[in-house]
Image (cartoon, rainbow, N blue to C red):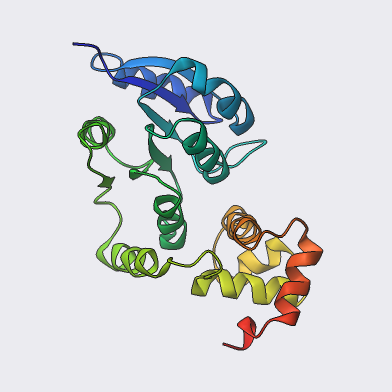
Length: 212
């Protein structure tokens, strides 16, 4: 029986090596990548069944990379392995086609279990997502029906950016990392088909979204 073909993508090589060693007894690791663009360009030729990727990667973030990979490889299973416990981000990952979401603080055995689950056609969310976080995740996931629908957190980010705050300032006010704010910002830009930060702020000013 042919082993499941897995690609790993993370900008921390030490982690890549550790995960590769963890998986190789059961799965065939056919490639490892340290940035999103290279992953998107080279993954199709490797014909993976599963891609395990971080949300935050250089040159192209994991959500955008995952979206492009799903277009190039419609049957591939995406599992996100990240430090980010933001329920909005988890919901967005699943909306864009992810089948698994784990934290880097998860046990190694969880990743093995997640790969088994998605190959069987299921999905996997780490138990480390607390009940409150998971409940919020489910709530946001159910409400992400329209392309133009923004989550409460995205509206908060948009409000602060429209006020002229930097991403670092917005992160401090919302008590999240600047990287999380950046993901919300670029996710909104993709959803709204907006290409520049100036256009995003103009959209916020022209819509009644911020007053909602």
